[in-house]
Length: 494
Image 1 (cartoon, rainbow, N blue to C red):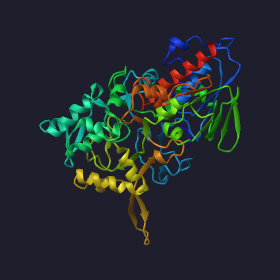
Image 2 (cartoon, helix red, strand yellow):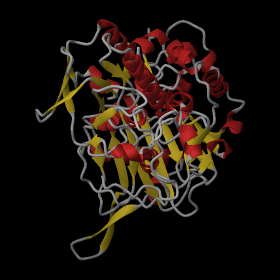
Image 3 (cartoon, rainbow, N blue to C red):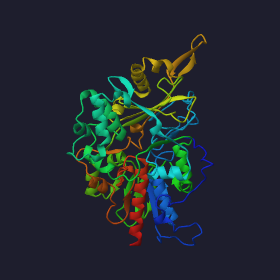
Image 4 (tube, rainbow, N blue to C red):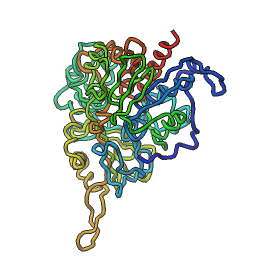
């Protein structure tokens, strides 16, 4: 992806301590010596939010850090889309887009993380400190689908099935029942299953029959931030990340997928896909859970049984993000989300509060919904439009923007819909959406998943290893970096 210029008005290169100034405020550029004395080098595997922040914290302490990133861009599952993008992508099977007919949204479009969950969350604090303008989605009118009918919450209040789903979802963090799936715990009717799957399944990365109700509840109870949901108004997330970690970018080596880590001796040997080797004295691994579970990196010796057993308690399902432009907003300018689709569980009016001119929908599918449509490639757009047609009396097909191609007689004809698709399960260095607890998982499993390997050489960060209740989010990735770097520094100083 072509790198957009970093946000000029945000500034460049804040260095460490943004989220934990009490721990890392002692390091200043004018310091003549490192804050933490260590003669070795530290490798960070992965340049997503966790990897960049971990490198930032350690670099600010004067430690020798380098970052190896498998993909050709920074950000991991933060993936912003602009009309300057081309199809040159090291995960081209995942990225479906005709650069001759780009979407025309005049606001940032995210193909990965797109919601700020909590204004005072770790990611929310970065957005706030950098003075990035935001849109509060609480002011939107969200729609809910039952019987293939979409209505606002107020219009469903007398419907018992709707009320049952909303009661369960709003009280999910307080759930104290048996360790069963969300579907079993909610016990709602067949008619309401799609709505439950949307709000309490797809939203958390899968489906209601795969996610543990008590496992998820125990994590939600740990959250310390507010429950507000925002989206950024004018700035792409990748640009925000690059601006915040500007000083770390030069330490990142792109297109370097790590395949093996040998920590059997004092010096750790790291091997990439091409066979090239790197050495370090300590390593923080931040790659996605699905990469670890598929043995994308071979560890020698094998990781401890505690970590391996814990990884089996969490899953990372398929996830697809679709961006579709329309000539007309037929769903309502004040609308935010549509919850409860059978084909696409989550529709989002992504222009809400951001555009008065362009009508763009962003569709997110996780778990079974994504698995089903993934095999259809670009033709999955037809299934989405068909569902919209059913909800809005044929207006999806009528108003979708299409490519204009001359026929054999030179007469312009509308052809395929204009859309962008990112299938995260087909990205070889991501392999899915974000982590969630399966039935049987406990919070201790989450702790064990990210536990450092005894001996003080291998540490883990990334959203799946967050122990603060924010797993599955950018904030969780950032908080995991604080934990992992704290463990690493402790291994040096004690």
